[in-house]
Length: 607
Image (cartoon, rainbow, N blue to C red):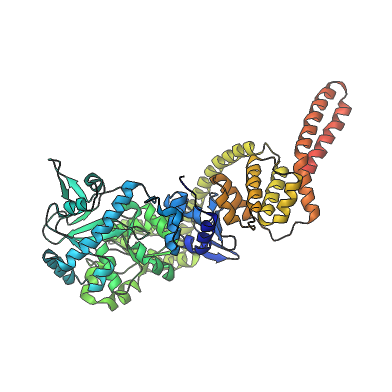
């Protein structure tokens, strides 16, 4: 690095950006005791194992082991460097950092920064052209005819791209942007003659923003017979449709507040719903819902309400979305839209109040939708089809976690088809046993492999016996919380710990305390460059420190660490002696063996 950010600046940013608040922008956190828990954003899971400690200002995942402070969290989530994270947190908290001013744009590489800057210019330009140009009047009238209000047009920064083939190309060139870079971003296209032309021509423009609120793409909607009807920005390092949700940045606070997200098919539906008072809506971008979308939503909420079009295509998309959302553990509801209506059409025809009351607030459960949806695949006038349908529905009921729900829908099924409840119940139990058996087999298979890996990892780790590992870990954990203990350890054994990572950590810790810093694991992390060392510090900091270490316990830990090499040497010496005695004096060999066991037992007692 050409320069360093001062410790004072780093400390100021850490205090200004609470780790619970920052992590809470990416993960739905729930307080349990002294910590906050949520689904880990770094690996896939259905049971929360990701913990955030507000007092210590650190986070740690007990599943994948990731941990750190607010700075490392932003580095991990956004793929930023240390200084890029510092810049981001400074902007979040409204602070100015003189040390960073001379560096220019470091948040992303130069090409990506140029693309972001270009999008920022074009959002303003397109919106201006919609509002104030002759060509824009027709587009504005179209939006009014679709029910878009002036407030929504401004809030969502809707714009218009002119009919000219190279208006934007010339504009960007005058602003100093390289045409090929703009073509890479999908703002321009290159003709056979090598000339650059505007990608979006004579279209209403909907800006697409990422979760940070930065525009990274456009959706262009034609207002004529031009094909295609919708034109998206192409895939790029910034614009990945499979990971983006339209309006997520604006809806995020409402989603968190309501504990529910409403998923629409398109941007027009999101805006129409927003005008109707439904402000927690998002949409996928010209693509079906993906696993990445589902995982993203699950991190923020437990409940997803699907509000897709009422036609067959919309219902098929709803069914597919349910399968993905079930995998990540979401509670699913399905809006009750009449056949062949999309949300936008329903709002225009029946108004906002009826949309909220009759579509959103009366949404079906996942199971009610599935029972209706599956019927279209069978001719229920035929006995064979009826039985197949019943078996299919029982398979879906078997996957429900709630026994009350299972009983409720099973009784509905028995009543509708005049089948004995006991017979259906017996079939349901059989299905559930099969599901459990399959889950157990998968788990057993996974555990077998995992167990082998763990044993292999343990072999590498157990070069140092467990007792000594535990002693060192506990001692370092207390040193992170107590300067008195750290000073006592420094006076007796210094950095002569048996594990290399502990040696490095305490060496840095001594320097950290020498500078007059108080015990603060989150601050200390900024003194470590190695990610593995940072994770170790976080793990040790999250250990239970509810009991105080007495002077005797401290001396015992120090003695045990010092004695490791002595004990190891003794055991090796006795083992050699025992081998020799086995040939000449088995009785003496047995005595030596007992002595070895005693030494090992003393070590075990510390575990």
